[in-house]
Image (tube, rainbow, N blue to C red; front, side):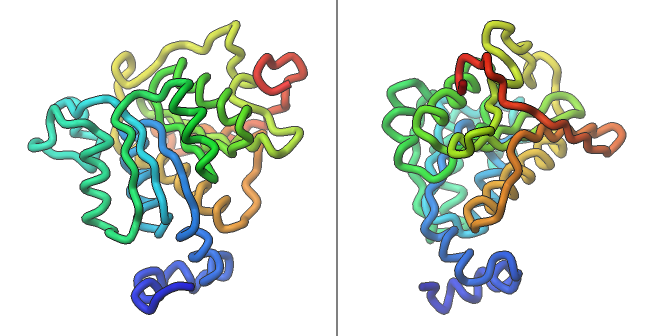
Length: 247
């Protein structure tokens, strides 16, 4: 049951027919894990924390660099050289002290995934390298955990939702087969504009909130944003019978 303070705090959300107090309670009870607290993880964690998600796990072993500051909006000059997950947790607790935030200040590996993925309702991939994406995808399939994937470089970004609990849901490897390894494109090689990350991170947070409050979130859709034309394209995917991960 929501307290009087929570009713006031989240009143603009609970007045929505698709949320209500029941949906807000679902957010309060939810546990999510965010892999990567950089350009995507910053807006994702901000919005989920502000929305009232009750328990958030932050996973990142990287330290803040001066080149991160134009796009990683939780950080400032004084945070340089500090761990991203630790620093994010401190800032998020200041914004919403009622959220329980657990920090894993190291890079995700098989052991961590096998321990923490079973504890959560949803995983958000905000990482920036292909090997981590394959690991997250595989472990979400193994542990039957829904996954919101986001990626962005340059002026462009994309997001998709994978739900291993739906028999026909395509996974990340259906889109980018591991034997044909997707190109290792990231901010360091192609550059990035901060607002593009905000848009994709915002969409990841929106998908997460919808899922956690009982809305249907479509699988088998790749949503691609073109920041130069301000346009979206949506592509329909199919689960691949030859996929080494999910089939």
